[in-house]
Length: 121
Image (tube, rainbow, N blue to C red; front, side, top):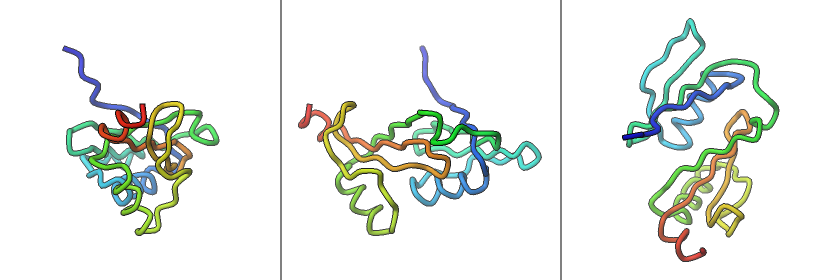
């Protein structure tokens, strides 16, 4: 069995990134290691992202993360009402149908759902 369950991302400010992933995407703090400038945030399925303060490439170094949601249009609308800025609203893209926003370091966060992905294939 092979299951991808952790990812380390270099970030400019580990606390600001932690706060963004919690407040914007609803992830929870799994643990923190302040002397290593690191926070671990996880989703409801126990996938963990280690946010490690380090030198980062401008614009997130071309890295994109895809998060599956129940309904991409409803999620986009709810986050937009909270003032979250998006790079683009849900639309058909080269990777499928979904919305995109960026975290504080410029990593692209792509939101999609199974229903609209199939409908717009």
